[in-house]
Each structure stands twice: as C-alpha cells, then as structure tokens.
Image (cartoon, rainbow, N blue to C red; front, side, top):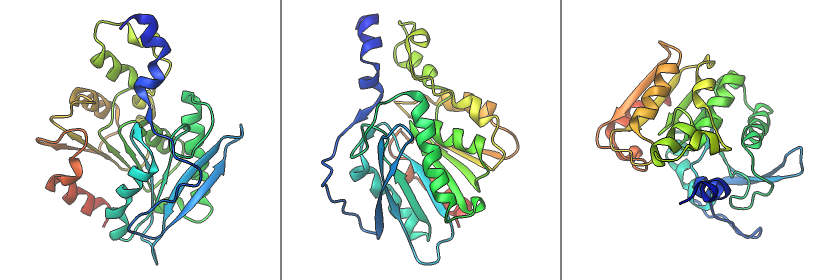
Length: 249
C-alpha cells in the first residue's frame, strides 16, 4: 500500500459502513421508535429509540465502525431488559443516514442526539456509552455536558495512535484526517467513567486503552480489564456483566 493510497482511501479503511434502503423495516425484540433528525447542513440522521415503562434512565449508545443499525440495534437488548431506554444513532453514510463525513460532524451529530434526549430526560439520567469508534464521540459529549456517567468499551487513546499500531511503517499521524483524540476529551470529564478492554483485543491494542486511562481523571475512573477478551466479545464475560450490573442497577 502506497502513501497516496492510504491517504485517499482512509475513509474506506476506517468506516466500514453498510447502507440500508430508506424503506427498510427494522425488526428487534423490544419496542422502539425510529427517528430521523436533521443536522444543520441538511444531513438526515437515522436512529432507533428503545423505550420501556418507567425507565431507570436512558443510554445514548455510539456504535463501532462496521455495519449499521440493523446490526447495532440488537445491542440495546440487555440494557432494555435491565429497565433502561436506549437511543442508538447511525453515523453519516451508515444505514439510512445521509450527509458528508468529516471528523467535525461526528461530534456535532452526537450533540444533536444528546440535545434531543435532554428534551425528555434529565442529564443525571443520561448514560453515554461508546463502543470502539464511538468511544471518541462518547468521551467528547461527556467532556461538554454533565451526564450521569460515561462507559467506554474497547476505547483508544486516539485514532492516530491505533493507526500507527496498524500501519507502523507509514507516517500515519501526518496522513490521517480523522484524529479522534479521545485523550483530550476524557481529561475534561467530570462524571464517573468506566472503561472496559480485553487483553486479546486485535483491533484496538490494550496499550492504547491504558494510555487513555492515564489521561482520565482519578479516582472517578475505573478500568475493567477482561482477561481473554477480544474486540467483539466483552459482553460474554462475567467481569463485564458484574460491573454493568453495578453501574447500571
């Protein structure tokens, strides 16, 4: 792979989105509403909002870099069954969401949905949850607002840090248009933070998550190391389940 190829095709390497027809009907095991919010530049952003009777709170969930809501919507199930509402959006070019990508719009689009939730929920009832790619947006929101807590699953210090690990022979920090400097955001977070990461993560190296933890405020941040966990299976481990039961009772 040449430097020029890496630069030109970096979005295709970073964002493994799949598109859905606008008429696609989501099918999940729990009650939900489908939402379409309009960004300032006219982009249409699709989301699914799972609702329960008398919710304990709401989880704003930012998903990983592959797939779309037809896949990621299923992640709401365990949280809904615990009595929480869950809102999951699709990023631009994912699923039914439209608009042009840039690092800046990942943040402004995330703010759009946080502001939407504030219409019906008190901030102390909002948990911001980020997984993989979505951990940067989650950390950004928690640095700007005052949610109940921040949960990061398989997070990274920065996208530049992960890219340097994946492409060690290229000057990726100079080439990369998407920096996602999670470390800058997490240092400004005031709410409790929980970080989950596996020892065998083949996508985001454990060392990147540990570097992020070093930048997180103490003692409000808890790092939960999942022995044997990889990038996609942390929810299957007892250490993950027991901690989630504690922070989302």
